[in-house]
Amino acid sequence: MKSADFGAYIKVRRESKGIPQRIIAHRLNIDTSTLSKIELGERQVTVEMIKGFSEILEIDYKELQIKFISEKIINDYSNQPFFSEAIENVISKIKK
Image (cartoon, rainbow, N blue to C red; front, side):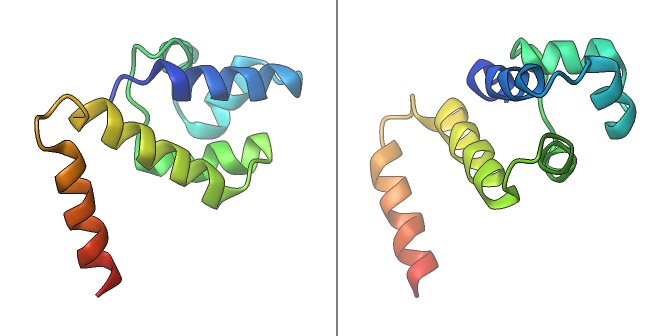
């Protein structure tokens, strides 16, 4: 997923807390350049990073995971002709 929205959200939260990229990158065990690319939407966020971002940036884990999953689904599949029907199908299966 190349998500500029998710990356921008992370960047805004990081900057609002005054945390340098190098601190976040170190805590996530990634390069500063990787974090920069994530914030620019040029690099994928992994599911494993979500927990780290939530702890470091003091964002509710559930909120951040929902944002991540939602944007991933939209970015990866929304251009498919039967997207809405597929989402409805998934929701009906989850509710069973």
